[in-house]
Amino acid sequence: MHRWLVPMLLFAMAVVGCGPPAPPAPHDLAKPTEAANWGNLSPEDVQLAKQQQFCPLTKERLGHPRPPIKVRIHDRTVFVCCPGCVKKLTKSSP
Image (cartoon, helix red, strand yellow):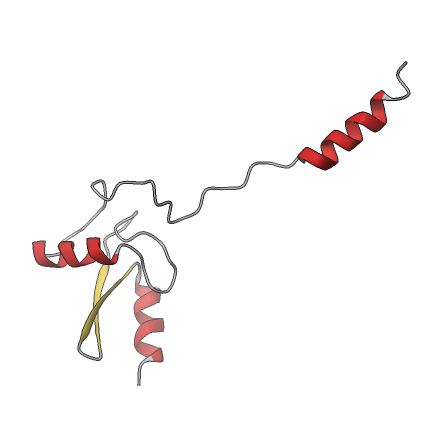
């Protein structure tokens, strides 16, 4: 009676998997932007950052958990998520 139980359990574990669930994406689109941390950005900059929504380098949602940083590259305003992204962005621009 129990001869089929072990192979059946092994098959079920192989099909379904037994590992932990995958972590949520860092830029979960379902999260509202109202709870974001906008820091000392002007109302105009907040609107621009809300339109951009994500850091162009890390794809993380702007304002979560820290305020976005405004960077001016080639006469264009871009918001990034952290000082590391500012370095990468300014280093890559000629």
